[in-house]
Image 1 (cartoon, helix red, strand yellow):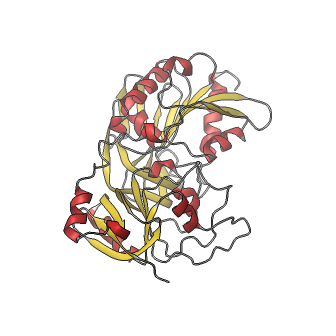
Image 2 (cartoon, helix red, strand yellow):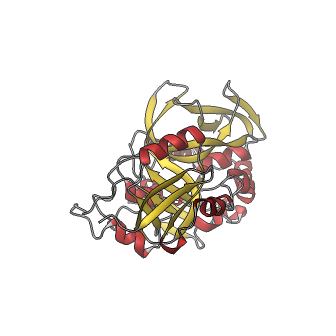
Image 3 (cartoon, one colour):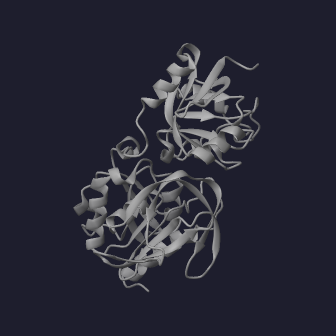
Length: 375
């Protein structure tokens, strides 16, 4: 059964017809594509996708259903879902319900039976852009739907941190004896991040994005972690000032994804919007010092601008670029030379994704140990 008509509308006037999937209605967001062939449950529950309509390049989505172990947050965060051929059944021993039922219960508007290959090629050439999915009574003439899409705010300049950050702090206990205590600033954190830190003997206190900077440097914590998240890093001015406060106290700091972008701005670098971003679990990143290449998981639409010679001055001493993407030379890692602070643009928690970058958590633990004089 095909289902009711639906339309995926882009701000440049391109309209794709298909069938309604998930909830009926209308939704708006930045159209982006992800190249991962698995891990859709982790992807759609990643808060970094807040404000975005997600196009899956993989053809079959929903084949393993939905469970209660794999979500990376308490809800689906994508604004809308675009797929070619959703599975009619879910077949997995951990499956508790279908993907379609979760989309409906959480009011996520989707569209199926569209040419996702053509959409991806279009976005690859024209860049990520505003878009909308229309179904049911929300279907209008093409001109009317395009006009509604164009009336939506652009991602550039959007501050989405408050939408995804926790309102109250909470603690993830360490596995075994507590070796270190870390404050993780929730900019859109995924569950697997504190889980991997906890496995290394780290007690993680997840704090709101608007946390009092003095709380972070009160002596309670051995380090600070900056999470992934959505939106334009230039808009997160309060968190940038918080990072500067942490750097002034020379507390070990580790940032990923959005956290890297905010660290970059705290160090005096600029950020910019990528044409279509990096999204998927197969992005090659090279460590400059060793030449080693890791296959990594990405989800970001902005990046840090740094000198081609990979060296730069900051208010906190000399900084350097540590990693670059082999696809387009985008900055993928930063570090301070004279104090314990580093970041990467990708997702070492890899949920879903390859585990090449997981040792970065060990690097953070070693950094905290050295700061405490334990090694």
